[in-house]
Image 1 (cartoon, rainbow, N blue to C red):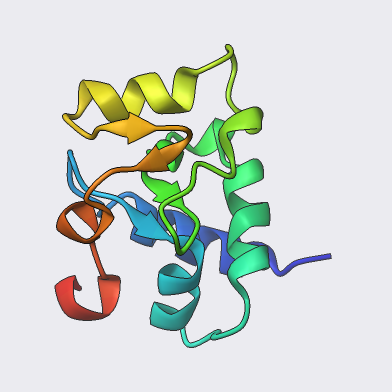
Image 2: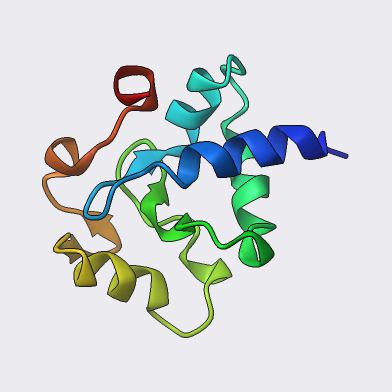
Length: 107
């Protein structure tokens, strides 16, 4: 089982992602000094519903909405991102580099 304090650290980072920006599971793992633990960040996102974090802003390293099936509704993750001005085509963020928020540089 994953360390609950690791999940709390993940949630602290995710809460800092600005409106209209996204980051990746791996970028969060790297920031937390846990390079190679992107999957564990994903597990934290799966368990984040009761923590009120903008989990929709965390995507894979290529800008794909790989966690979308964990959101209620068919396209909720995409709708939330589009409401923030992010264009999605075929489950992929367009202009991903423009929207990418790197916690190593920003925090």
